[in-house]
Image (cartoon, rainbow, N blue to C red; front, side):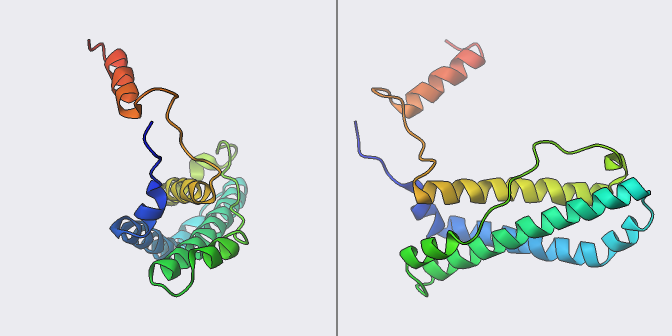
Length: 166
């Protein structure tokens, strides 16, 4: 079996991180502008239940985005040589990622403005990606290939089976 190649550190020190960084920081700016402007106006038209849920979700989203910003800024500092990877890991351990809600909904969910729901979904996807990178970086979530199998071959076999190929 060939040696394992750690892709996450390479991705995080390459142009892939720049894309992730821009996406994350851009989303933070967009959400902040929305919540301070149009979102504030939209929230005033909601029922009591909708207003409570909107406030809850905006706090959750803001918290997750601030956690992401901390993680992204630490990783950028590593990439730019300002701090060592070990220093970043120590600092990142202080960033406690909040759990994503298992499901959303309930009274007032249908009232939540579409743009807010869009930001929640986009934030969740980005958050999940960063949490996965963080876990892999810490060695907590290292994908393994099945013993004695080539991972690509195994995946191709699964795809063929799923789509009826031979």
